[in-house]
Amino acid sequence: MNARYSTPSIGLHWLMALGLGGTLALGFYMHDLPLSPGKLQLYSWHKWAGVTLFLLAVLRLLWRLTHRPPALPLAMPALLKQAAHAMHWLLYALMLAIPFSGWLMSSAKGFTTVWFGLLPLPDLVGKDVDLGNRLQTLHLGLNVALLILVAGHVAAAIKHHFIDRDGVLASMLPGRSH
Amino acid sequence: MSRSLSLPVAALIGIAFALPAHAVEFNTIDAAKSQLGFSYQQMGVKMDGQFGRFAARLKFDPAKPAAAQASFDVQIASVDAGSPDANKELAGKDWFDSTRHPLAQFVATRIAPLGGNRYQANGQLTIKGRTREVSAPVTFTPSGNGAVLEGSFSIQRSDFAIGEGAWADVGIVANPIQIRFKLLAEVDKAAGKIPGK
Image 1 (spheres, rainbow over the protein chains, first blue to last red):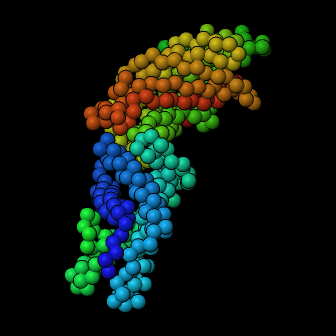
Image 2: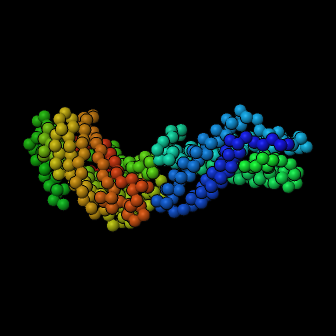
Image 3: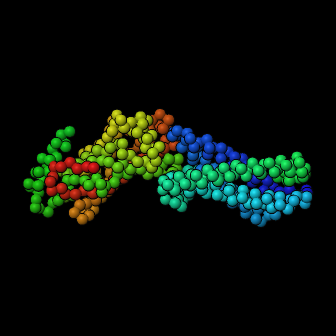
């Protein structure tokens, strides 16, 4: 069990971990602020980060589909292996679905998303208050699901490292050869 | 305002002397079929809004633009910038301060022909107690019994103190505001009536 993830996989994993954590925290924080220039700025930054994370997730998924990750430990029960795979694919799905739902929500609420204030994304749905509210609920729900999955993901990594004492966590850590 | 008082008189004179000649004087705006909108940039995002309630006084004969008169009163409280949050914010002191300045007003001072169906309307625009000269090209398109007057012009919101304090930063909400109007002008036989909705 000495195989490690490839350097691009490790880089994208930790970059996205930081980006998702920050963007998600910002989303929860900015939501209840009273309207101010600062709030508009935070919303724009949140959307720019979301579009960036979506593109990183696409890149990551393409990399994952064309590069075989290290095999899971032989000692792992088949059921746990299946659970691990399911969890990873769900995480990929959420990494795509969350920014996508945010983009749709923004359009439905009447705000075109303009990446870094320069590149306007098409409005896939028109302005629609009801749809906007439903997409907001969806965006929130998907983020809560992400939080739960990430908690499980972190717990599994810790279990691998301290209880199973296998190389699973080490295989995703940067800058170390086993 | 002497201008509005003189309107019925002017309209009566118009009826007395201009009928049944070729000239048609448009003297009313159907506010329900007219639109007054604006757009602006918010951190690179184009935003649209509109005013729902306004009244206009008009006296316009396309053949005699020099004699034209036009003025507008816009109810600031009827602003719709896209969300209840934004509308509430816009009523506040930093933006329109609509309690102290409930009306924005435009009074045309000169309407000059540009050739064909185009005119240049010059006038005084007053918002939040500040008055500035504005000028807008207007196209005149007959439509049924009436005519559509359509045009747009741009103002700088800082000229009218629209967005003070923290909002004065034009990096968030940009300074230029595009104003678009599309007005259905009609000939009201019972001239002199002040239309509006």
